[in-house]
Length: 262
Image 1 (cartoon, rainbow, N blue to C red):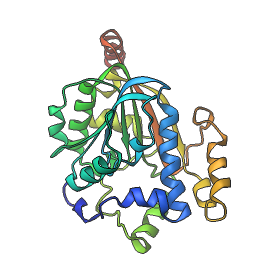
Image 2 (tube, rainbow, N blue to C red; image 1 turned 45 degrees about the vertical axis):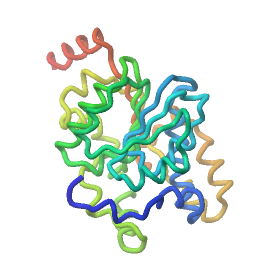
Image 3 (cartoon, one colour; image 1 turned 180 degrees about the vertical axis):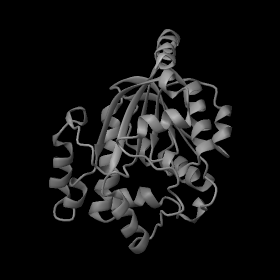
């Protein structure tokens, strides 16, 4: 994450945006988190949110869904904000100095969420991150990942945000993915990906509905929920949503043989 000083982002910025910002930005973030929640199991023991920032996503996850929740981030001030507002007996937030320091986490997790994180990382950091996710995610566990889709209108939106909003993305988004190349690119950046993970869902979100919130937030949110993500295969939404399951040892061996035979 070298190059951009993320401490420049105000403490709790995106949390406030989702809760009280402009309707379009509010729905953008809320809809993203709701889509991720849709992909997670109804009940499981543990959830790790990597790159949790101010804790907004985990604040939406009830204890009935995950009895143990942990959010980690490289920004201590954002972690302090998250802990003060959303920490609880079942939900904790922890500062880690870097991706490499995820090795301090020892417990396995049933699910890992990676919400708009990978695009901020250099190639070596993506490789290290997936190495740690592979270690931390229990066999059969689920990874849910979102990232901007550069095969959509997102590049135009990013240009407009860079020019007119209070946050600039040029230096932030350094590793870019599309709906069409994300599996291939992840396997290139982290070669064991194809054998260690089985992709169960690839789709997109945030095509038109967030922008309708400028007219009616309630209607736009209703429309954003109208089509379940598993029935939405449109490749040009502004965010890619990927769900992958961690293979067990036997599945890894089969996958490795299949990859080797190609």
